[in-house]
Amino acid sequence: MSFVESDERKALRAAVFELATGYGHQYIARKARAGEHADELWAEAGKLGYLGVNLPEQYGGGGGGMAELATVLEELGAGGCPLLMMVVSPAICGTIINRFGTEEQRSRWLPGLADASTIMAFAITEPDAGSNSHRITTTARRDGDDWVLSGQKVFISGVDWADAVLVVSRTADAKTGKLKPALFIVPTDVPGFEYRPIEMDLVSVDRQFQVFLDEVRLPAEALVGSEDAALAQLFAGLNPERIMASAFALGIARYALDKAVTYANQRQVWGTAIGAHQGVSHPLAQLKIEIELAKLMTQKAAYLYDMGDDFGAGEAANMAKYAAAEASARTVDQAVQVHGGNGLASEYGLGTLIAASRVGRIAPVSREMILNFVAQNSLGLPKSY
Image (cartoon, rainbow, N blue to C red; front, side, top):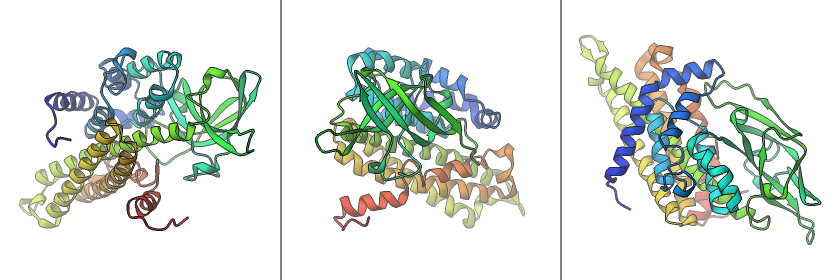
């Protein structure tokens, strides 16, 4: 792993940042407040090859890895346009289908995920399961050659925009009677599939939904991979989720820090710029350090994942997600403080990020569960739950 990015990676960063700043945070905020999606930005990012940069070239992707996709999301966020569905559609769903799907599934779904003509959501969280994925109750049963799904999901991003949802369910093991996980591609227009918006105090173009599966009938080919190996398949998608969540948080943190530094250089109080005061400059300098440290861990996690080290990537991805989420929340808070009352004025584009940056401490995995993981797996301490 090199600490100096290649010329190609630098060029990718610059091009994506230019795209994002061309739209700007006001574009995202306006779309979000109107209940609309970032259709134009998403379509252009797909047309330019950014959304599918991690997917194989034979399916219309860029042939890169998670490192490249995380770079795209970070730069979009740094330019004021964080896109949550990038965590879901090309990263989680695209990765799982590419690694474990059939050739028919890859040919059917990956080209659309790469060029933005198809969007896929991901549904794992349930009202009574939360972080404990072993308690998922959405169940799939066989009926002839078909599968029939029933259950409920909650806090599912972008369902209203998606063509299909990759649903995590369970199947009954005939030998043991126990339930085991399985993954299914569920088109959003299939009978028995319904969704309802969850009202959120979160200004985002990617809204949250409850999903209801009422005897949803699917053909056999809707199953992704093997029903006997779905747990491994599921976790193969969760490492990219954490890496991309880190990139999402880093982008927001960089955007907020840039806003704070610009304002601290320009704002004059008693004849001098407020950035000259250590009470302003030191917290910003500390946040710069925290962002860079989180960025390094994110790059390490992506590197390990792209090298095929799933276990090492899991540890690094959890640490990166923790560090990036903390840096993001702290940076946005400090940026607002530097701006004073202007920090909550729509003109300055920071107030909308308060809730968005705070989400990183909760989803897709809470910081407390990350600390549990590190305590048990990295330090060898006893399991606490």
